Length: 94
Image (cartoon, rainbow, N blue to C red; front, side, top):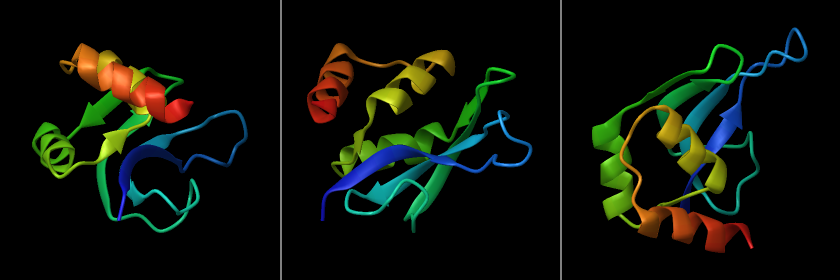
C-alpha cells in the first residue's frame, strides 16, 4: 500500500474560506475520502499551520511521501524540509 501525506479540505461554508487538515492517505483515495491519520492543520487565510512533527517523521520513516502542497505548508510551519524531500514531492507531482 502506497501512502501519501496530503491536504484534506474541511472549510466549505462560507465559500472562499478554505481550511485544510494535513492527513495521511492511501494514494488511491480521493482528496476528501477516508484517511489513515490526521497530523496537522493549515489555514491559508490566516497563514496558520500546525503539524505534529513526531507523527510526520514517523510516517516519513514508514515510506509516506508528501505532496508538493504539503511540502510548501511544512516550509510555512518552519519545519526543516530537506532538498531530497522537495525533489521527491516534485517527482510525484509529475
